[in-house]
Length: 304
Ligand code: 9Z3
Image 1: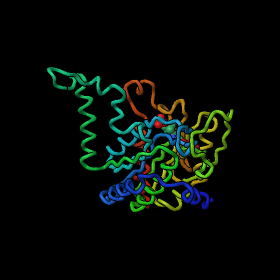
Image 2: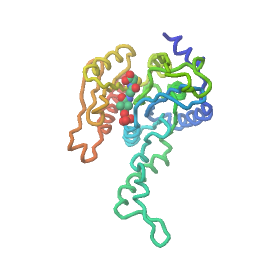
Image 3: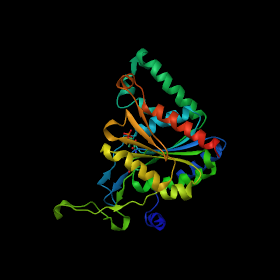
Image 4: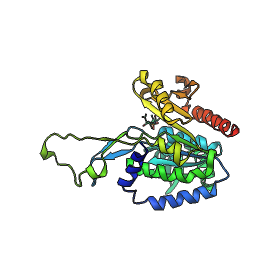
């Protein structure tokens, strides 16, 4: 099993910007060693079908869970490494999607000004954003492909090991279970002239194995489990917990992920539910999830 994940790294090239990004990670780690740190992964990975990639297989995730949760971890004093799918939602800027920023502005006598009705919302977002930026507590590391994601996951985890149990992993990214290994991937765009296409995808090694046993063995590790069949959710979450022996699996259904999650540990199963009224008022389930998770992390630190 373990040689399997090692083989993956031996055979899949690292991202072009890997060394440059890891330098930023190392410097971030040095500035925050006395604090609690969270690695939050967010968004879906792509699996390329060609080396010169025109087509790829994607995993569903808008990046809401990861970006919203990041804001709550930051509000609670954590330093955060945000490992996210390039162009998916990011903390703070997520509040201003599409044309919202343009709609909040006006031009008066040749000057750009913020509309009266948008001021309080913008003020709130910018104040929080600037505080975090001034304290240099958020490091963003973008990825696109599964390969980028897995290289950065290993690199960042290895650096965060210096935090010991003060490190928390919150793995909300939707990571592909299948891929085409580099040596089986064609160089150029697959042509349709050859008729219907059939491809074989290989299984991605289970990286939670080295995460928990080797890269960050003392961290508080939380993984997410996404299902579409309710009957499988808790059973699959429990199976993940038994296999990887990490601390917590947060299960969610694709259809109801914004209003209900189930937190599964070795000894308990706990639901967090947001009512439709709470949702309508702009409530975010991530606030409740993060509060709960931080309490568990504190207990973990106290018990050691
Ligand atoms: C999740 O289950 C996330 O909560 C969502 C968030 C992807 C549903 P959004 O970004 O969605 O708010 O739109 N993430 C984990 C998904 C995943 O791939 N888990 C693997 C699995 O279920 C294990 S790591 O097998």
